[in-house]
Image (cartoon, rainbow, N blue to C red; front, side, top):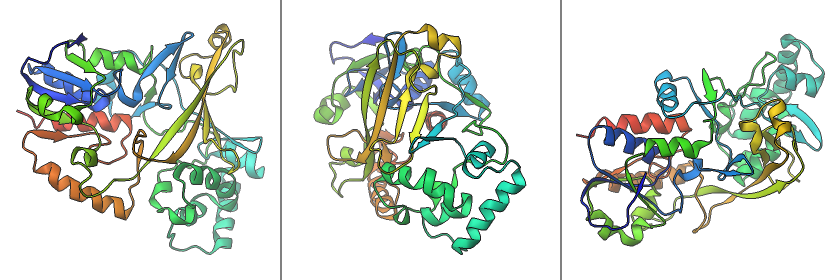
Length: 379
């Protein structure tokens, strides 16, 4: 990775943002012989997947990122840069001190109701559905009860979801909960995808390999120096907030953001026994606690590392100056985005791609698929 010191060279592409979309685009374009300049307003590469090694532990600085996909082409692509480990996401829920397995499966149903067979679990859920008399779910609460019953909704969904979104479940759309896995087998693997893991050495290694050979300039705000940077390249790939690019001329798009309280626990080899523990009661202010070492250390390896690092995650409404995380894809924001998209589509020199530029929540494998798809259209 080269670091640019003078802004004089003319490039084929200026890529704004060194997250997954920008890094994948840079790799694919460089492979085709295009010259690339990557810039980022942060002082590090990787965007929100950035990991930093602290006390021998790769810390996910912007929240937990677990790679999962059923697309073998994408899996082979990322493993071509760095080997991925065997991590399987099996979060645990803590409700007022009692633990439950996630996603909802026979372990959860046994912990909640004492049932031991799939038939008993289905009967219990159906009984609670009928009690609530919901035929056509109109919001997240009704959809959740139809999906999993009132007990599990009240214990494991309601408080957590309202903390995460800052809104009552009755005010959230039903579709948010539809993707939640429900299994009538004893299986704690959260994802249904064929492939899953964490890059050995952390995500920063993956990004470094993708952008190797490209020129990079960090700690610069593209929009504050837009005219100067635009003059350096024939075309621009922009991965930042689409509304900011256009000076918020139609108003701000809304996001949820996350803040982190990270703590090094010295002489504590194993704090919670799992990478992810969700706190589903409304009273606990944070949504979950991440113990970073469990993403890459397993079994005895955990105990061999004498210290541990945890992060408590707090979800809140985005304000200007905060890092935007999750688009609020309600009707009002979707309509506002469409107005900005019209402006973006009219830009001949600029390609808008990724979570912020397209105002869409993307899992990591979907970001890669999207970048691959868009780079094919470039000649």
